[in-house]
Length: 463
Length: 93
Image 1 (cartoon, helix red, strand yellow):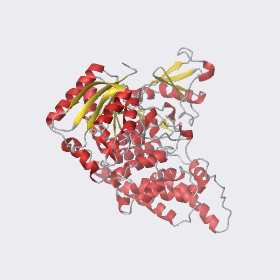
Image 2 (image 1 turned 30 degrees about the vertical axis):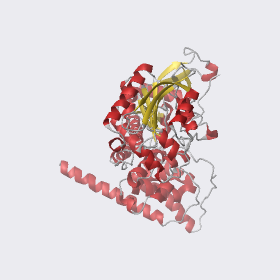
Image 3 (image 1 turned 90 degrees about the vertical axis):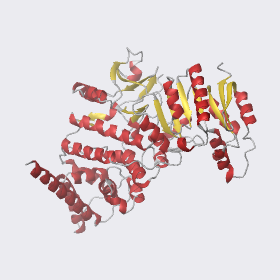
Image 4 (image 1 turned 180 degrees about the vertical axis):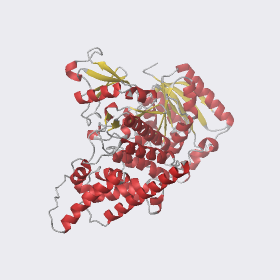
C-alpha cells in the first residue's frame, strides 16, 4: 500500500509518494501526454540544465517495483530533497530567489509554448541554499492566447510578502502561515499607504488588482466570457514576466535586526571563541554526523564549521535577518539549509486536517544538535522549563553539544534585568541532572573568562 | 535610428500606462460588486489592461453590460458561492 503525501491531493494531474529517498509522482493520462510533449521539445532538459528544475525522469512503475494498479504505468522520478522548508520559514532573499526561479522557469516554458499553471511557493524547495522548482505537473502546454492564470497566485505567494518586507519592514510569516502560504491582495492593499502607491510595482500589482478584484469578484463569469475571445500573445506574457523579474530584483532587503550584529557584539572574548570552536570541531570530527542541526545558528559560524566537517546542516534561527545573512553568505551550498523558526513556538502543521503541511518538529531531525548560546534564551526569554528544553534538544538528535550560560553572564543578566526571578531551575546542576537523565555526558569544558560551559552528550540508547 | 526607436518605445509605454490608468479610473466610478471572493478576476483583468487594446475591448464589453443595465436591459447576476473556487485547484508540492 503506497503512502501518498498528504499534501498532494489538489492537482488532479498526479499524486506524490516517497520511497527509498526518491520522490515519485503519478501521472494522469493527460498529464503524461503533456509531459511527453515537454520532453520532446527539450523543455525539461532546458529547465534542468539551467538548475531551475529538480532532475525529473519518467520510469515504468513495474520496473521500479510498484504495482501498476496502484500507481499507473508511468511515474515521474525525482531525487528527494532531504529537508523540506516552507515559505513561512524563509528569509527575504530566500523568498526572492524562490520567486525568481518560478519566473525564470515560467519564461523558459513560455519560450517553448508551455506555461506554469500555478505559482504557489510550495512548488519550490530549497536544496540547501539553491531553490529548485519541483512540481513538474505545473508545466503544461499554454492554451493559445491566454493570460497567465498563475499571476494572481504568484502575487499572493511571492510578490506581496516581498513588498511587505521590503517597503514596510513587516514580517509576512504569520500571515503566510495563516493563509496557507498566501497573503490576499485586499490585505496587502490595506497595509500599504497612499505614499507606497507610487513605489515600484504597487500601483498595478496591488492597487489596480485589488480594485478590479473588488469590482468584478462577483462577475467572474462575465469576465471569463468577455476575455474568452481575446488573443493574448505569448510575447506579452513574457514581457510581463520580465517586468516582474526586474521589480523583484530591484527590491531592497529589509533592514537587519538586533541579532544580525550579534557576532560582533556578543559577550565573550576571542579566547572563549577559540576554545568553543575547538571543542565543537573535535566533537564533530569524532562523531562524523550525517546531519547537524544548528539551533540558534545566528549568522552561522558553527553551521559553517559543521559544513567544513562534511555534515549536512539545517541551521535554525528566530531572526530573519541572521538567516538572510547566512543564506547570502552560503550561496550555492546545496547542503546547508537555513530556516527562520522559533523553537519556543515552532512552525505549526497547517492546511487540510493539519496534515497538508507538516509542523517543524515533524521535519527537523538530525544526528547531532548544536545548542550554543541558546538555552538561556529558551529558558528565560521563552519561559520554557529547563527540563523541557533539554528534553526537546535530546529528542531532535541523539548527540550534540549544549552550552550552559551562567547567571553571571552579561547576556543572562540583561535578560533577567526586567523580569521577576522565577527561574529557580536555571542552574548548571539542573542542566547536568536533566542531561544525564537522558544521555551520557561525553566531555565537558568550561570556557575561559566567563560562566559558560560546553557539554557534549550522547544519548544512552545509541552508545 | 536607435534613438528614435527608444523614444517610440517610451511614448508607447506612456500611452499604454495612461490608457490603463484611464480605464481603471472609469471602473472606480462604477458601482461595487458584491464582496464575493474570486481570486482570479482581478489578476486576469490587470493583465488584460496592461496588454492595452485587448484590455480596452474586454473592459468595453464589461462596461457595456453596465450601460445596458442602467437603461433597464437585463443584466445577469448569477450567485457565486462564497466557498466555491477560492483557490485554483492546482497547487501542490
